[in-house]
Every structure is written in structure tokens, then in C-alpha cells.
Amino acid sequence: MRRLLLMMLGWGALVSSVGHAEVLSFEAARALVQERSDALHAADAETRRREYDVKAAETMGYPEVSVNYVEIQGHKSLDLGTFPFLGHIVKEADLGGPRSAVSMNWPIYTGGKITAAQQAKAADVEAAQAEQRGTQEQLDGELARRYFSLRLANDVEHLRQAQFEQTERDLARAREFEKQGQFSALERLSAQVSRDEAEREFIKAGHTRATAEAALARLLRSNTPVQASSPLFMQTRPLAPLSEWMQMAQDANPALAMLRAKQQAAEQGIVAAKAAYMPEVFAYGEYNLIKRNLSLTEPNWIAGLGVRIKLFAREDRASAVGSARAQVDRVDALRAEARNQIETGVEAAWLRAEQAQRQFALYASSLDLARENLRLRERAFDEGQTTVLEINEARNALLRAQTGQAQIAYEFDIALIALLEVCGQGGQYVNYIKTADVSLQP
Image 1 (tube, one colour):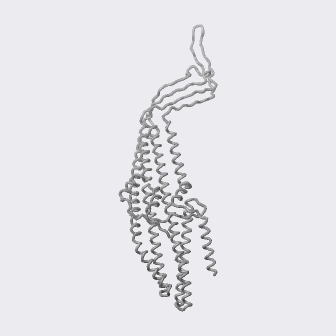
Image 2 (cartoon, one colour):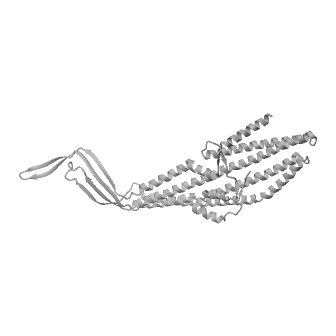
């Protein structure tokens, strides 16, 4: 009686927790991740920062106009020479007082430095956008793994619960048969052992489900338990050929896109380094706002064109060009390495998904056999014509087939998101769920 009471309390707590849980489809869970993920927020902020950098660089070729104000003290003596009848004339001038002027400097030609800087910043935006897409792909993959881990744990828990309830009924029937003299005490003890073992597995499955539930809730930044409503699924129709997935990865993988953008930025670095050898042409102008304190030699305004040629630089310009070229070589090598790893990832995920499809199809006969065998054993047991051990073995065989099928479906679901993730198509996972031709229900 005490054990029955504890069991009822435990089931009541489970039902209560489920009643307050947030039931989410995979699509709804994905929307929550996009809304709440700190990693996505950080990636979005980085993209916006790079976009502002591009806007800031758009006016680098415009003239720069500034106004200045200074308060100075100064004195100047002008020796005008000696004149007949006038003698030696010296003019004293007090130059103290305020000075204020508007000045303008307009870079007309910089050897390509400004254009290179603008294009490099535009490439940085593309790199940040690719990194943001990569973060989204990683979150889609992590969500699918946690979501369907919970779904698998839920399904296994339900199967274990059903088995436990069946062993409870078997034990009750064995006790009746023992009273009627049809079963020995050994048979009744066998039923008791089977029932206790089923309870242990049921409790273990519950702990596994709770762990998976907590992991998904943390990813969703949820303070309440989360229930997964989208079932494990299987697509029995063949996947697209491996060559198509390879091409898709080359075109849309975020890591490759980011490295392509970094290569563009590195190539602009060479242009900027070579610009240090080129002359600079600029326009210059200045207009003095306060004229009363100007000396005789200070103009009211001045304007002109200038050329600046750097004959000797503190930094070795040839080494700067070499450094920029080395950066391009580095990015080229990183692209080649990334391409190789991505092709390996595509092939591995595609093979895992295809293998799961084949294994899933082979479970149909095992399930049919296990169900028929259990049906016959249960009928015989109801008539007292078979042992507890035999019916327990039949139930375990069916349970192994059911959990095995669910595990294979889970492996397909995870292999599929891995394949889509490496191909830059994680957002299409929801469509695969909707169009799946097999959905597993516990």
C-alpha cells in the first residue's frame, strides 16, 4: 500500500509538471531561439557595427572642413630701412589676440587607398553576415539535437511506462493463479522480479527525460519545463545525390562565405599597401575669420592644389606589401582547408542519414514478429498456459524493436540537420519535418 501511494504521488507530480509545461513544436521552439539567443543578438550587433563602418567610410573622399580658434601673444618688428628725410624706420606690430580660421583639405588622389579601405569594410560586412548565418546554422543544429533528444526520451519513457503497467497486471494475474494452484511461488516471484525491473527502467527513463527537458529549456531561456510536440520523423524517399549536397555546401556554407569575404578584404590590403608608393594630390584652402590681428604677411584667405610624395617612410613599405600578400595566402590556405573539412562533413552526414533510412526500413519485420509473438504469449498467459519468463521475454523483444526504431529515427533526424547545417540550409529543416512520410508516436 505504501509503495502504491508513493507511486501515485510520483505520477501526480509528473502530471502536474506536464500541465504547467510549455508545449512547443519544433518550429515554435526555433522561433523562440531566434528571439532569445544571446549568440544571435551578438552576431546581429556585430553585423550592424560593420554596416555603420561602411557608412562612415562612404565620405572618406569628401573634403574635410574644420574651424579653429586660438588666443596668442606675439610681437613683430619690421625694419623698413633708412629713407631720406625720414631716417631709419622700424615698425612695431603687436600680434597678440585671437585667431580663427576655416580650413579645408580635400584628397583628390590617394593612389587607391580610400577605395581599398571602403571595399575592405564592405567585405567585412559580408564576413559578419556570413558569421551571423553560421551562428544561426549552429543554433538550428543544437536545437534539433536537444529537441529530438527530449522527444526520444519522452517516447522511451512512455514505452517503459506501458511495460511497467503491463508487468503490474502480470503480477496481479500471477498472484491469482498462485491462489488457484495454477502457478507456483517461483512463477509469482518471477513476475515480481519482472515488475520491479520494469519499474527501475521506468524511473531511469524518467530521469533521462527530465535531463533532456532541462537542456532544451536552458537553450530556449525558459524558466518552465518544455514539452516537445513534434514527433520523431523519417523520410523514406531517397535523399538527393551526394554531388548536389556538395555543390550546395560550396555555394551556401557560411564558413566558406566568410572566408571569401575575408579574402576580398585581404586583397584590398595589398592595394592599400601599394598606395604608400603613390603620390597624393589634394586641394587646400583657408579663410581667416578674424582679420584685425593679422600680420602683413598673413593672407585673408588662401587656396591651392598640392602634391605629397613620400620619399622615405618610417615603415618599410615593401615589407607592408609582403605582409598583405602573406595574409591573402593565409586566407587561401584556410579556404582550402575549410573546403576539405566541409566536404568531409557533407559526406559523413549524408552517409549517416542514408544508413538510418535503410535500417529504419528493416525494423518493420522485427516489429510485426514481436507484436504477433506478444499477442500469442499474452493469450496463453491469460489461460495459464505459459510462464512469466516467456511473456516477459516477448514484451522485452517488442520494447527493443520499438526503442530501436525510435533510436534510428532520431539518428536520421540528427544526421539530416547536420547535413543541412553544413550546407547552409538549416532553415529548411522545418520543411522536412512537415513533409516527412513517417512520424513516430509512442
